[in-house]
Image (cartoon, one colour):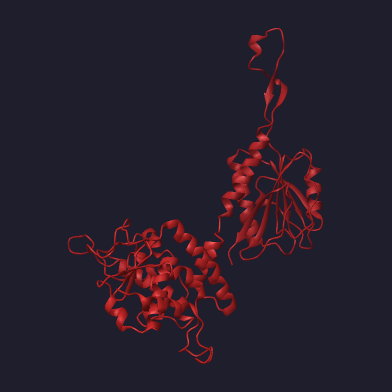
Length: 418
């Protein structure tokens, strides 16, 4: 069959409306979606009378009902195209598997995924008439597909024999819920497909263009923007990074050894007439310089200090083995404590970590490891305290650009969600 109308729909979808079509706010005049171009033209069309209109599989094959295609106007074809393409972009199939969706719950997952797509396309007046909005399903606005699925599924009762139905409904295809249909082609069919690596590159290009589109438009539909941000700037949990940095620094210090005559050498028996010194591995001395200026988030500071406390305890550094210095533009308190969170912190003014690090370098015994907790808006010294490894825990909030820190410090960005 000819897919000319399908191509026309793709071009209609990514092109600007005619200048005389009406005011920009007219609900009858859709806005162009050029950010979808790479994804739309990657689809592999397949004629299939077993689908209602359009459906997709995970290999980016687009199953098209030929009768529907002939009988449908180009704008409506375009709306359905955008709908199915968003299922692929947002990896709804893989997310469905993570939620253990099967044939008995595929309908609820499809409704949940469709509700998020409807919110994205609705902003541009491109939601297909057949696509339910969250309100139509009595669901709150601006939630993820997983949240909607949890509200909708409530896991329907099993079939009388205790097994799910053999085949899910046609729905949007395995590209939405990860469940192959009988009409879908096998992965190695010779009609073409998009491999996973290419699909991920398409998603990245669309995500970049989509963020620009949202910025210029001035609105932020929730799930789609979250998808784009996560794809382009994946959030890495900072807690294990911080504790890992502390563990590595302590391990480096523990590698230091020295000779001592208070403990005999294990080789003493081989030289009975010579006193041989043993080896001593000193317990690391740890200092924490805590930025107590008014700009530091107390909740995040507490979480970060707790992570360091846990890492030190797991390494056997107990008792009053940690010195905590509270500092803004001056050092206010210096105390040896069992836990960093037990320290009494003072300050609340400006910030100058040069003062705090200088004070840490003057401690006796001199610290082997210095952990600095700060929002980073501070001058730094040119060099670290003598003989000390330095971990800089830079405290901030997501979406904010954090200031630089010295190259001689191991930097860990500790971010708090908005």
